[in-house]
Length: 257
Image (cartoon, rainbow, N blue to C red; front, side, top):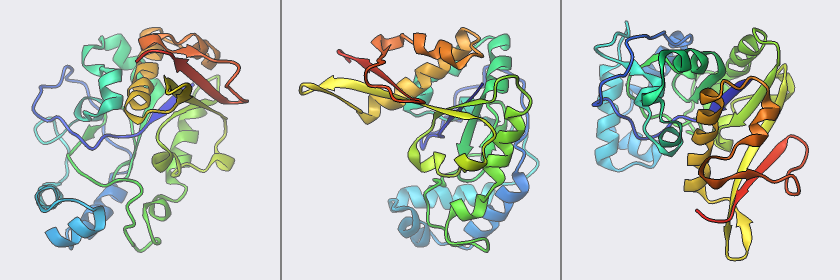
């Protein structure tokens, strides 16, 4: 079983890493190609391309300029500890034991506009490049064209190493579009998290993002390798709702947030 999640816009390079262990991203040659292209963009170009303020654009132009190999503990940080958004507050990987980090490394992948696919302990230098960015490049009109089959092939390679080729999609639509479902060699299960509001169950973005991280945490803490056991997920008051679920779209609901 393999869990996939999206990255986060917010990054934390100030808090010391809780482990000295790390690996390196597999697709750095492709990342470097993107960085070389992005270095040709001005602050104003980045602001227009990514719909960012001038301040954020300037920050990211500086990041592209300082991006360099080799990646070390001095200039990079493990991805699962560097990302700092809602999903990652639910995951809370900072308190994982070494055994739990081992499990995380085997069963979790992070999709990325710059790095393609990241293992949790892959060293990552700071960046901003969302998968949905319409960055025209030599391979096509956007990052989906740039990554092509690379993301899917990477996930297939990981799925082939396990006994149960199931991918649990906890990524956003924007990021999961980088995966080609028909070419993925495994079953895809998509959990959906809904909260009770105004007389009905609705997806509320903030809560849903945190719940994705919580489900990853649940799987890691309980060493779950059989996806069916995820139906027992009960963190933060969520429960599997068979009446709203359909096929491999599993709906989890809660009445109070």
